[in-house]
Image 1: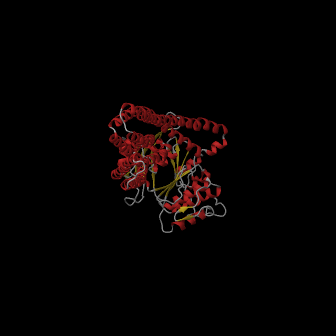
Image 2: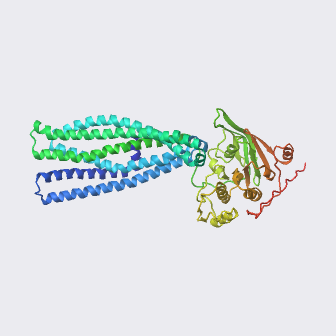
Image 3: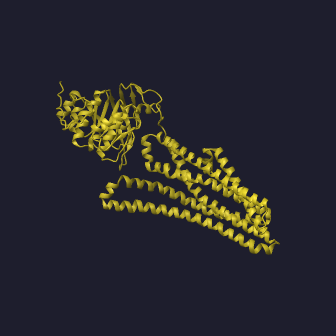
Length: 581
């Protein structure tokens, strides 16, 4: 029932048009049965009227079937496109942390496999409808020949339907189990593609991964899928058995029970044999509709999950002009989450911080201290559990968080590199991009045309440079770099800290850098040390005191603010400036 509602929800008028065309096609098929039987009874003495009627019915069958299939093809693709768009909109409306809990494999299966199965089921509707119409027309014709034969067929159909229902119901159960296993299988496929280097280097890990994850999951999926198909095949052959039994009764039992003419007997057998094909088509479609029902159930469950967790207002276009960035404050902000491989919850904060334009801030701390979580809270990707974020003195909540996020350009440690400079603006975008490609020593590997990058299959460090280029072209007030220099060579590490960051600061940008490069700590205006969710801010005289006890070295420094360039030789970092007391 849910599947039928889904079909009609996309376009009721189109579905009705499809069914009408299919019914007319089925009626033409039933008429053809009568024409064929009448021609056999006349022993080749064909009249012109009979020939014209046969040609008209054949043409009508072809035309109406063509209309039904074309209409349904348009409807199926329109409905699948709408379904994918709705899912993407729902996904975008869910906070990042909630999406991380749902998991990427579940989202990918819904957007790919489930929608594809539903599309195949929608494309099957015209054929299914035509076959049903043929069966109905054939039943009417058999009733015209003999109500007795029709009643006998009715009894057989009822018995067959009951047995068929028992078999396919069990098959649907196995089909749903196979669909659940498919989620896990896609998760393992993602592990395969993303963890290929680690699997290549570790034979034992590779063997366990294949034996437990790939082999085990594919075996379970195969077992459930074969179990489902076996039940569908049994049900399908059961219907054929009933038909052959019915034909045998018509041929051998009916003449003994009733005075039936050879012509009528021929009509019964021809009609029954003709209806076997449409019946097989109907039963075959039911297995596809079963898979579509399982896919639709998964999509609806995912949709409900997404709707329950929706909390982000994510418009696709800019609604208002962004406010001028003057001051960003975190007031007693906390964020708790479950730590991997531990039973307790980690709590970040309470955090009290503020940022102003033209400020270069380094965020340091050990692994697991909460740096990335704090960065996501600051950028609005995570909402605070308690406390408030204020922009220019105004609190940030669900109603304006997406507007707030537009202030940030970021390159995270787990960044994704798009093949286009999506969202970047400017009349000379390609020219600017080429200049930066040259400065980043990527002009021989990557070309840009109409905002499209010719190549993104680069090393990790080179990909980070491309991500940096994309963020730089966005020209936003607040920049975040999460361990950007961790896999750069000394030349580009030097450029990043001594040229790019000072240039952004000179352009009155606020820059927050997550880093472990203590050699460059003196370049920061402030250094924030995060220790198990708690912060320690050093600047000015306090920074000198911190340097004295060997903890951290945050000193203001005079830096080169010239446009981004790469020197022929690495630029030496300026000596730390002493802070007067």
